[in-house]
Length: 148
Image (cartoon, rainbow, N blue to C red; front, side, top):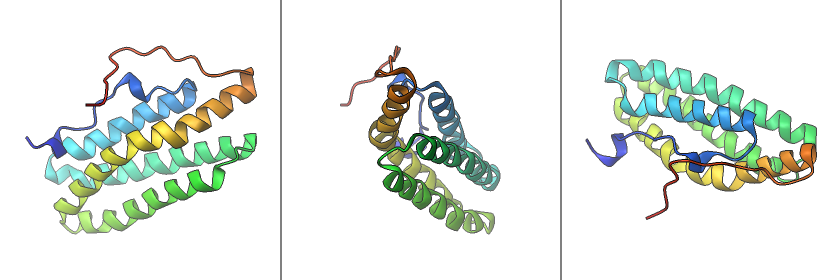
């Protein structure tokens, strides 16, 4: 099995201390893993499931940003829109039998997510917790992996 198809394992490194976001990120990892590891004849359905997840995931984060006057809303939303635009371009290609493009898309999502979570989502989580609780998030992590 190549590195690209090993999936996107969940790690507590992805925990940001804002429970609704952390829960959504676990779901994100699950749907990306499904695209990376499913049988070829299941890929189109898993791309569709990713799009459905991403639409809700990104809409929820946008609503949190707008409700809290998050300063970097435009940048964050632009990043989400780029992912959704790509997913919507890939979906009909996979449905027509182009499995390779679907696997490549899933691999790129697995590469994109850790950086997005570390920077844009982490800033949003800190902002939301500060707004609601007056301080920084407290995150208890297990199984932390260090960059190589």
